[in-house]
Length: 363
Image (cartoon, rainbow, N blue to C red; front, side, top):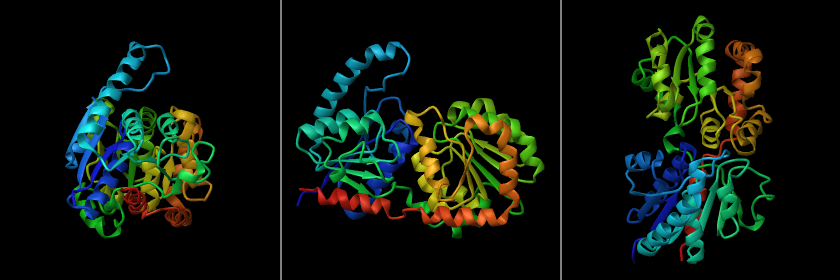
């Protein structure tokens, strides 16, 4: 029997890339002989991250429409046509059994062409409010794997399966890794560690907040591990010269930094929220307000409503941050309850459940 073939497409941010890699890894563990091809957007981070994970990737000349008038917007129709033609060539030559899209603009042309060609397609929607690409693709999709309930107003109900978000399998068991983590990141085991996560691209507002509050935080006796994002590294790396502060653009061992962390301040992107539920560390979400339909606030609120995390809006940081962090640091009951409630919301089998749905579609 010939080996199965899978195309996966998703990118632009880690929130689209890492779920695709997690799904590919699980498929590979089930079908070691299977062939895999990733399709991303040229010049986006998937073109580096996917090959680092051991998979081949092809880039499309595609980008989203900007909200303001730009030259790139004028090029959009040409980029879309170019990407559709290239996607058709990829589908014809690779002949996949199933095509899987995890969001991002590159998945649009690819899943569109696969649908026209009669190839089964699976959409994996990470957010509580779907992106425009997945909403458009849902009409033709064979299955839609979602992480949140009540998405019937966006997707056909009969195609939806509630699976949760795929996450890196290495974050499932971090309790045994603490001493390795302290050593790996050269941390002081006698101090509490505050982990700052701005998402894969970094967050200007969170970086500004931590810069402003650095003296306050260090005076509380915590050590800070601060992921500022590649774009901001040149501006913020100077703070690594401070005692008990490490600034990095990107974290290569998320499992170990989660194991080392006692508290987390994070954006509320879907993948981050899903991973933090598995990890169960006391967390303050600071959602980005600059995303479609404010979906990060909705992602974070889904956890806060179940008493699994705290949330501060960007507009309230000045007045609330210090009091909220102080309470979190000193209230051990609060820490314990947040951890327990957050872990109850985790879906550790999400990747396996999504792969089960993919396997059902193989002809």
